[in-house]
Amino acid sequence: MRSGGSQTVPPALRKMRVVATGLLVTMAALFLLARYLQPIHPVWGFVRAFAEAAMVGGLADWFAVTALFRHPLGLPIPHTAIVPRNKDRIGDTLANFLRTNFLIPRVVARRMNRLDVAGAAGRWLAQPPQEGGRIRRGASRLFAEMLTAFDPQRLGGMVKAGIGSRLRATEVSPILGQLLKAQASLGSMSSARSPGPLSSSPAVKP
Image (cartoon, rainbow, N blue to C red; front, side):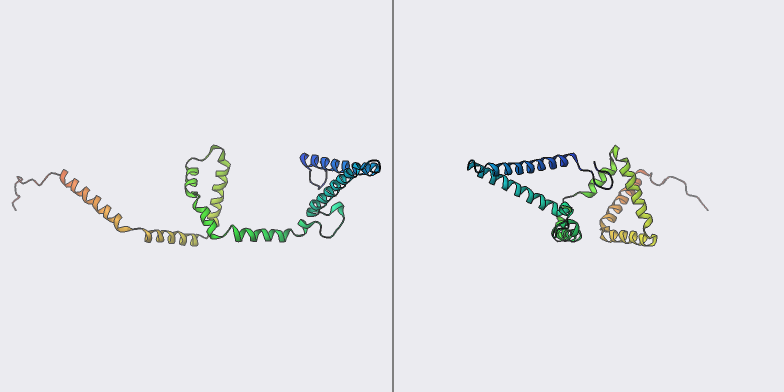
């Protein structure tokens, strides 16, 4: 671990650094050995070429990866630390790519058609998980704060407009027909149950 403001290096990354550095040092030692023994036998020329290629490749990979995120060895070499210097431009480019290729209405509508948001919300509200108490409390508090943040007059107008549009879109005549039919059937049942007028009652003389 490093003290101060530097970040902690994970053990796996530390192990990888040790292995890579060890392999680079091994190839450098093999290159020096092959160069020294090359006059003895020609086969050491092939070993030297192999070790040299391994060293060049390892140093090139290290420089390329390091130059993306910081200056190698702390030296302000041109065209290094590419990501920190261009992070705003990279972020804008990625945001533009996502907006123009994934967040277009056609793609979003196709994705939303596959989701049953209302059904999932209804099932979650009807039978919320026991371990979701904290989430429920947070959602309730958020919803309450959203309602209190709205303008009461504007909220009332929005509710009235929603109810009005729903009523205008509703077919009222079938509902009224069912209501009248039910009232007529109830009236006929009540008239059948009530006794008729008493015809044998004496007339009251003035």
